[in-house]
Amino acid sequence: MAHAGGKIILFGEHAVVYGTPAIAAAIEVGARAEVQKAECTTMHVKPWDVEVSPDCGEPLGDALAAVLSDYPGFGVRIDASADIPGGAGLGCSAALGVAVIKALDEFFGVERSPEERAIFSMKWEGVFHGNPSGVDNTVASCGGVVSFRKPNEIEPLKVGKTLTFVVAHSGVSSSTKTMVDGVRKIYEREPETTQKSIDAIEAIVVNARRAIEDGDEKKLGQLMEANHLLLGGLFVSSPELEHLCAIARKAGAFGAKLTGAGGGGCMIALCPEDKAEYVRAELAKAAEFTLITRIDATKG
Ligand code: PMV
Image 1 (tube, rainbow, N blue to C red):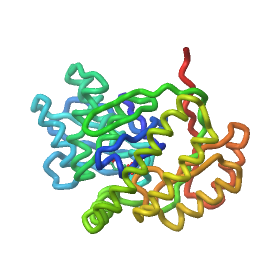
Image 2 (cartoon, rainbow, N blue to C red):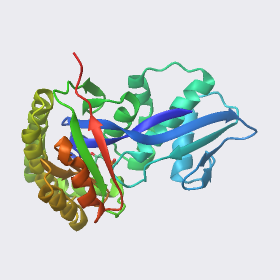
Image 3 (cartoon, rainbow, N blue to C red):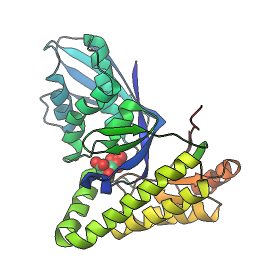
Image 4 (tube, rainbow, N blue to C red):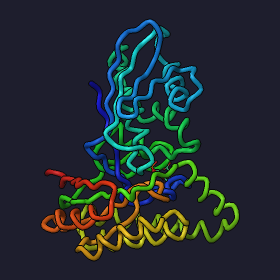
């Protein structure tokens, strides 16, 4: 069974679409897929009980058709499942796409490096997001914590100290495409001001990279707050996300921000290790679901 993880974006979402770097980390939960020979080609996605074929006209079928054109033309049955909800900002579609491609590669004996798979999986992501930066599928393919810049600059980061994040879902599902379109409209209306926000986010990403390397959690928390404010200025936050961020701060997080496309979906809170369970319990009172994920310090 092929597996690919979801992701959290620590810094730089939305700005990454305009060519600045973003920092993202893989999470264990994601998607799985298995391929077997069949009469005709179908894909069944378990938690949603959806079955599609490449010519069914649904986005999932279109995504499948986009990647299948690279493989021999005989029928396959793909059984896939996702452990994270779509529209949550956790990279569900990318995890599913990369898991399906990994399973197809295994089945057809195609050799591909994680970096090559990241590039190939843009075909899948493009169907769902129109103009994806590629950060989600890159992290799903390569794992770890990376600095990513469009179109395919990937740098694994050194992590000075293990970082503990609580992830909480606002209970509202949102469309990445709609949120990215919204920022594009703001950019078109106010190019100079919006570019200043993007530049400011880039400065935060550069400083955050240093703070990750140094293991400086306090600084990282402050940078998360600053990044969140700038995202709010691009109208991608929501009352539910603001509420969750406020809860996390009050409960003792170093900092909190929305993660992914926003408008709903998830927020993340960087927590002192000994406060993470408490922050999670406080967030759980208002969130659809919560989880704790850690980015391990780099050895050596
Ligand atoms: O919400 P997600 O997991 O689809 O993340 C989207 C990240 C954006 O920067 C908003 C879009 C992109 O393509 O990078």
